Structures are given as C-alpha cells and as structure tokens.
Image 1: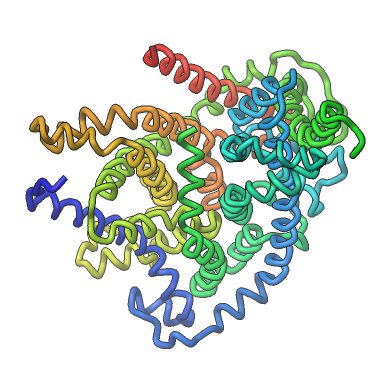
Image 2 (image 1 turned 180 degrees about the horizontal axis):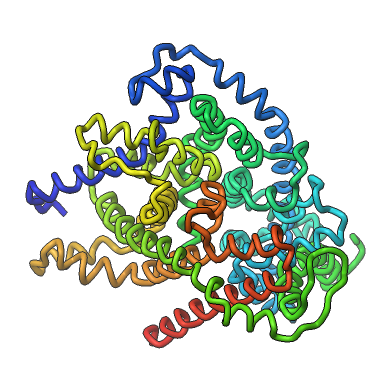
Length: 276
Length: 292
C-alpha cells in the first residue's frame, strides 16, 4: 500500500479532519470558557479566555441551587441497582439460551428480536400504565425496573462470547460433580467478564444520559437525576449563561473521563453491536 | 439441587434463569405494545380505568386532521440531516482507516460528542445559538462575517436546521466508528490485488469498499430513518416543540400527558410503530432479494 497519494488528496484529508475537529470542539470551548466567567464578563468578553481560571463561583452556585449532589446520589443508586440486575439477567438469559437446547429457545430469541424493533418512545403511553399499576410511578424503582431488562444487543454479545467458551470446561466441571448453577457461577460468569465490562460501560453512559425515562416516570423533584436537575435549573435561571455553562461542564465530565479511560471497550462494544 | 441428574437440573436452571427476565420482557415490552393497540380503540384519558370502546374513531381523527400528519415535515429535517451525517461518517471512516498521522486521536475526538450528556448537550447549543451572546454569532462577528449572523432558533425557516445539526453533531461519531469497524473487516489483500491490477484509489473505493460495507450502509440508512421518525429530545428540551419544531413524538407525548387524550395518543403511537415496521420490513425484503 505504498502508493504515493497526490498532495492535494492528503491536504483535503487533513483539512476536512481539522474542520471536523473544530466543529466538534468549538461548542465545548465556549462552554469551558463560559463556566469560569462572571456574568458581566460573559456578556462582554465574547470568545476570549476567562480572566480567572480559578473562579469556581459558578460551579458552587449550580451545584447548590441545581441540587446536583442529590441528583448524583439518585443516579448512582439507580445505576448500581439497574446495572447489577441487568448483568445478572443478561448473563442468566445468555447461559440458558447459549448452553441448552429446549423447545422455547427459538421463540424466546425471536421475542427479544421483535421487541427490539418496537421504538421505545412510542410505547411509553402504555408502559406508564404498567408502572402505575405496580405503584412504581414517581418512585426511584420505576427507572430501575425499566433499565434492568436485557436487550437483544446485550444477549447477542453475550451469546457470541459464550459460544467461544469451550464446552470442555463445563464437562470437566461436571466430572468433578459441580451443579449447573455452580458452572454458571464459577465458570461462565467469570469468563464473560470482558463482555460484561463493555456492556456495563455502554449501559452506564446510556442510563446517565437518558432523558425521557426519568422525565416521564419520576417528576418528583426529590428524585431528580442529573438530566432532570439541569433541565429544571435552566428554566428559572436562563439569563445566567455562565452558571449554566458550569452546570453543563460538571455533567459532561464523568462520561468524558469514563470514555477517555475505557475507549477500547466502548469502540469494541459499539462496533460489535452493529455488525450483528 | 446437588442430587438431581443433570437433565433435571437443566429444567430447574431454565425455569429459574428465564422466569424473571421473561416477566420483565412481557411486562415492559410485549404488554405495552399490545395494550397500545387496545387503548387506541378507546377514549381513555389516562386516569383510572374509565374508558369507552370507540372503534377506529381515533384513527379516523389522525387521517382526517391535517395538523397531525403535517408535523412529519419537521421529522424530514432530521432525516436529511441523518443522510448528510451518514455520508460524512463514511468519508471520515475511509480517511481514518488509512495510515494517517494521528488517526486514533481524531477518531477519539470525533466520537467524543456521542458520550456527552444529551440534555446538557442541547443546553450547550442553546448557549451557542443565543442570538445576542451566543458563541456562534460572536465567532461570525469576530471573523468579519456580520452579515451571516442569524437568529438560529428564532427564525422559523432556520430553527429546524439548527436542531437537526445538533443531532448530526452528536451521532456523527457513532456512525463513523461503526463504519471504521466494518472497513477493518475487509481483507487487506483485496486492495493489494486491485493495486497490482492498476486500480485507482477511487476505483478501489467504488468496487471494493462500497460493496463490502453495503450492509452497514443500509443499516445506517434504516437507523437514520427510524431515528428521524422518533426525534424527540432535542426539539423538546430546546424549544418544547415551539416555533414549528414539533415532531411526531412530541405531539404524541403532548397528546397523552398534556391533553390527557391517551386514546388518540396511543393511536398515533401505533401509526408510528406501523410506519417503522413497514420501513424495516421493506428493507429486509430488499436485503433478501439481493442476498440471493
């Protein structure tokens, strides 16, 4: 592949990349500088760097007025419970479907596939009635229940992994007298670790970023998660663009850190999902 | 459990491991889809269980009231934006699959918007688009392009473009990374052989790259179309659907939760669901035909 590219093609490639980079970074740049400015400064200084990068007043204010501490506590509880449940459910379904032959195997796979096609937003109207019937409406359990179920993407990724775990391992465990549950717990579950890591990361990001489940199912302000907190903050404080910028930045940071540290897991999860 | 034969254990395991997941699936995915059909034939207001069977009156409403279908025009902006996004994503994926200095850095940076918080992203763009103090107009002013300054959200001819751009900004990196994954699975010797046969760069792209990732391109187009039909959070968080930015889903959600007309809202959801299923069905059919 050592053919020489014409210089203009190379130039075009770099020019388009740099332009894209600028388009991605420009909004972020304006948020970062805005977050450190006073209100007067924000309205007068345009795109210039802030006078004082140690001005954390905006962060303090949005944290307190926007009740972000509470929002983070709520989202962490929801994440912990949903993810734990989700991993258990996902691995259990994958073990059952991946290791055993039984009559309902195909119908169950089919059901998961069909359900995947239904756009979630459209069925909310009816899902609300289920949540209300369970008395979970406006409680922290509503999003937990909704996030916990396995989705087809997750099952497909787990199934691919399970097929690569040699059956000999199961069999030698059986020879030593291990029960099937023991095999799931001590052989399959640990060996699914890499898939679990990828899925947990992707789920964490999508739950953290989700807007409409908390918005529709938990209007109570005490239960506000991060999405709801910033949404509620903006309304009455629309003029304080500097404080809002600080809030945006605080909310961006956790997923950015997760992404930068664990890029490879995220990229592999995203691509294996699409090439099914 | 330890004294059971493996055959019996198998059924115990299947029962234990599948019951809870299936209950969740039935309760939160299958039942709502079925209930939706039922509600759509009633005049339910969402409170209590006071509902009356009214047959297909809701559907008649949808197909006779021009205002309900008219909002699909808004969804069109997101569809066109999605097409542009897919084309750009393919271009950058091809570039970044070559040997290129700093390619991993570019891949990471261009993917970054996808992991950013959705609501916070929309609010960030609210600040960027702000007519007077927004960074976009400030930038245009600083570049001496004062004439290009716009009311990005105030101008009804422009607002949907501004909103669709946010969607492109956010999801472009995802499409790109999926394309990169697909491109990496093309065997390198194909290109090598083409080069020996004297193929130009464009010819290898046209006759090797495009056919190899055709499936993925089709998948992207479907996702673009369904994503456009389901556009909701960007226009909702930014404008609450004001200034002509109401999409079909915003209208459905408002119909249910604001106007408490769950019956009509359910019928609208069913219509959307059928449209999405139709699109996917058509695509499957085309795929199978060409697959032979």
